[in-house]
Image (cartoon, rainbow, N blue to C red):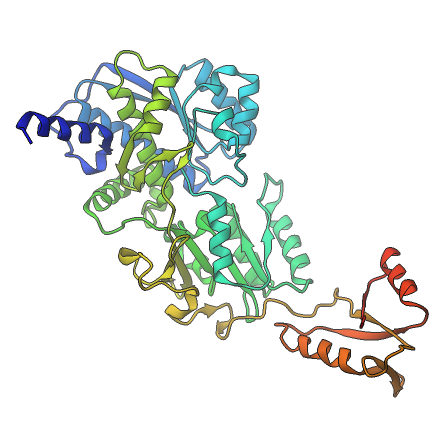
Amino acid sequence: MSPVILSFCMLSLLVAVSTTGADEAAGDHCPLASRKMGKIGGVVDSGSRVGREMRVAMEMAAEDFARSSCSKQLVLQLEDSSGDSARDASFTVELVDSKQVQALIGTMSAQDTGYLSKIDKNIKYLPIISLTSPAITPPSMAHQLPHFFQFSDHITFHIQCLAAIRLNTTQLFPPMPSLSNPGAFIEQELIDMRSRSNRVFVVVMSSLEMAVLLFAKAKRLGMMERGYVWIVTDEIASLLNSVDSSVVHTMQGVIGFRTEFARTGKPFKRFRSRFRSKYRSEYPEEKEHCNPSIFALRAYDATWAIAQTMKNSTGKSSSKDLSKGISSRIFRGVSGVMRFKNNVLWQLPSFQIINVLGNSYREMAVWSPESGFSKNPDRHNGVNSSSSFEEWGPVYWPGGKDSVPRGWVSSEKDKRFKIGIPSMGAFPEFVQVFQTNNKTCATGFSIKVFEAILKYLPYDFQYDFVPLKGSYDEMVKQVYHKVRLIFFFYL
């Protein structure tokens, strides 16, 4: 190959793959640029840990890009929604129409963006990178919102990871809206949950602040004892390094999974050092807990990716040009590879399974949709994979190390099931009813099959036999009349 062709190929490769500022030289020899290159807007919730991390990371990205570009300065316009969805929408419109940002970074969902785009047409064509996991993503999102990019792992992968843990009974704790008295609300919800049979609870799409309050209440109500199972998803598990030991003590035995990324490489270590310094200076009250999470890393990478796309565009970048640049390029940042396909992350995620124990947590295994569970994230290629995370070590459950809790107990609200059986069946070898000590009993082949099945249930099934007179048709009518009976039939 000639030197000219070789040089051309190398140049093409460099154009196709971009690297964020954490991987580049600091460029301290270059003074901050004075000529404005473009505006990026952002709406964050500074009242939450995630929002504060996003703000610091985005500011870092803007500063780093200004130093590295030497000729152009990125203008970053950030607004604080304080967790209010109405303020979030209002600031989005203001950033687009009044401050005329060329791209937007935030936590708006595709649904919220779709609603706003119907009110303000400018939003529909503005490149938006969302850093929150969507509960539902419409299949037609890429067509309806061609400039909306989802820079987070889809909730579907969270549910798949939950299913892989193989817990028999789960109850989803709903997302918490703005409440006048969240403590009283959570306590009442927990009391109601405690009165039911389920003992496995999954906390999804919750803020860290709500989770702290939730587990403090749960511990006080005795819901962190033996027999209970609690699972937290990425929004909480990724932030456990940012809470006090007193909070960790209320979460003993909790299982969590968080997005896996390279924590040992030089780019991350450099980023972490600078992030810690900046976060401590802006939020000194949190100086003991200032490590960045995946949310900070992605906010940094999203800001850098937009800035890099602006820089590479010739002349004044249109929304269409920016969106095309974001969707067609591969960015390698501190969070990993950033590449979009149909406006969502192209690569499949990996989740690290953790178990809260003592003053911290234990890293148990790594799970991915492709390979299942494995022990070593650096060799997560399916060679040493497993279908169960428990194969990688014992789990410390709430209340102490034990076998997997059943996840279901009898409660005061549970009613004993009534099993309807024919009192005068034509085939006594299948079902035969008799009375013993004022109690209805039954024998026969069908009864033995029923009792054998009950032995395989992971909980105690309470029931009573109820002999019914009449034809089978009359027994079936009880279902139509919504009588709570389970019927016994035999052929």
